[in-house]
Amino acid sequence: MTYSKSDRGENQTISDVLILVGFSSLGKLQLLLFVVLLVVYLLTLGGNLLVILVIKLNPSLHTPMYFFLVNLSFLEVCFTSGVVPQLLAHLLGEEKTISIAGCAAQMYINTIMGLTECCLLTAMAYDRYVAICHPLHYTAIMSSRVCALLAGASWIIGISVEVAKTMWIFSLPLCGSNHIHHFFCDIPPVVKLLCIDAWKIRIFSVSVSVLFILCPFLLIILSYICIIFSILKLPSVEGRRKAFSTCSAHLVVVTLFYGTALINILMPKSSSTSESDQVISLLNTIVPPVLNPILYTLRNKEVKEAFRKTAEKSIFAHNWRNQRMKTKVNENGGINGNS
Image (cartoon, rainbow, N blue to C red; front, side, top):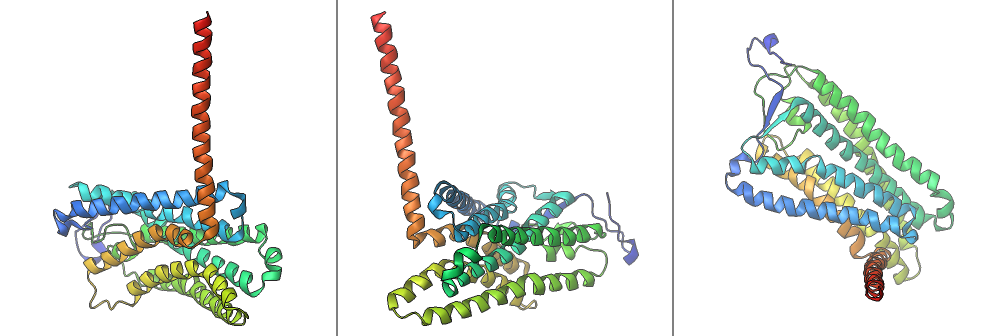
């Protein structure tokens, strides 16, 4: 498949292969960046998968808050795995190519996870709102069915909206240089390769941002306004402290997620460069996913206790298996000796 630029009177074409320029300008420093990103990626995978495992193995954590946390941890694993492994390969190798189909898949995964996280964070804010503002009705309101509907709606919105946008972008003709000045197939650098004026895509992207990113953010702010007023009405200082501590991890995660996104949106285009855009995107890609497990477990007594019980069970099971093996060996040895 080849896309021409004949409608602009130019003969440049784009073949099936695109080149992700990424951090090529760093030269030998790419090796150092590779080591840092590899460590962060392994910590992200280990931390989020461990959170999922601990929550699944401990019935005491089978509550709405931790149900949404399992979804968020799974999302973070998918989000980083859609970008970082290929970036690591490109940092080590000379060839930094990606097929158009691979580019579309990478954009699809990245945008799905970003939009789904916006919706999940809103669902988690609603969960905290109900827990603090309507504690007596919490169990009835946040039933397992409601939690499943909120999580399912988050994934359905992310998948359906972003598959439409990605298919639309890659159905349009690409031409000019096949170099993408980014480390992954993000929407803005890919749109620059389109042969036609992409104003319709920009309008669609702005509409999606307002509807599915800005609106959830405003709902989160509204939830926390209600939460703060409810906390301030509590009679004891200890009660206010405990109530706020249940929201602190989520509040930090929201700040990290939307903070990096707002920096990228609000940065003046006249002063931004491809390098600065890449740095901001890289921070958005690796920082929230690696910090989320830490933020949700560091000051959470329930999760730390569940970690301890899971570790003790693992150690006990390991010792029990070793003891069983020793017993079998001794029994077999005794039988052989008697024979």
